Length: 165
Length: 197
Length: 118
Image (tube, rainbow over all chains, first blue to last red; front, side, top):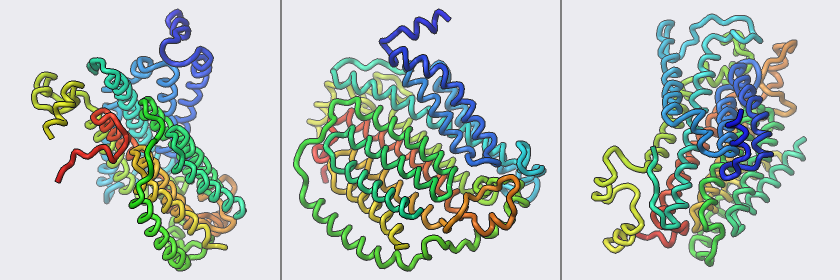
């Protein structure tokens, strides 16, 4: 709790304490909303793409309000790379498993009753894979652009650029 | 209802005229944001709620990427006169294009009565074949899942490409890169490189 | 009156292409590409609209015939959904290239970047 309090009063990075307080309350709601849109993609409007970009925008909000170190501590660069690759691989494996029934991308799991969470075969699993992949991709590109943008500032002022891990 | 649609499209055109012509870069980026938000309202009125959700959030991310990565530099306004040759030739070409487009658009099916030969099958038998009640998701992930695989590949490739461009140094160490003049140059090396050309 | 909607979206396409060709600044060219992508997505959704139509989603207690007769076309909506997210990825690549060019040449003006000699 002390670390959070002194992080909130630290005005050298991130934004003012008003923004930081509101972000602390709101960001849990955004993550739950994004996960709901991904999971219920076959019943209500939404799906993997919409939910994935909502989760990525939660990470972008965290980085903009608290600074780059807080964003990197929640998901590092290698973590984002692992999530991205596993999402894409999971989607291809779901497609290849359709060979057990007949052709590529066959919907082989049993279809339950409509309007429930566990219906429609493998469509919720594919939605989760796509959601994880889109979240990791958008987050990774935002971190790369923000780290690189700082180096442009230093290079144009004539300083020696530091190294990146 | 169609009057509101027409008014929103005229508003989008006026917003994009402002985005193209102003000299301050920050104002034109914000005008692109206005165009995107009115586009998502148009999507909602045309009966596409999935796309309206995605368009709003992607619009905000586009604004953040453009502002964060470009306006932190020192050049925020454009100076200099307009070149005449690209300006005049593009105006002539696009005037001809719009004239032909006016006659070509009349051949499309009437607005509000789509053909729907394949989609009629999807609407009729979608729920019993896949068990999902959202027909758009069942088209995207069951009837046409191959296109979603192509989209995942394109997104993956563009992110990997952006990472390769923004890399600080390769697998070799820093001294070897400076010797081969490859990667990010130091400030005193830039002038030398330009003399060599 | 009816085909004016298609024509207005084509006007937006032409304006985006004009901004891509006739401007000197790189950031303006990127803005032109973004406007062109918006206009293409709008045109695809306009083709699939039906008068008095509802979204193609089953609700509880809705009859089956109502969706068949009044639903809008779901096929262009699926394609446009992937196209919007691909537009975001392409924009990230373009901005990365733009940042590299600024670091090497210190300007955004395309006429001053002329190191390619024939």
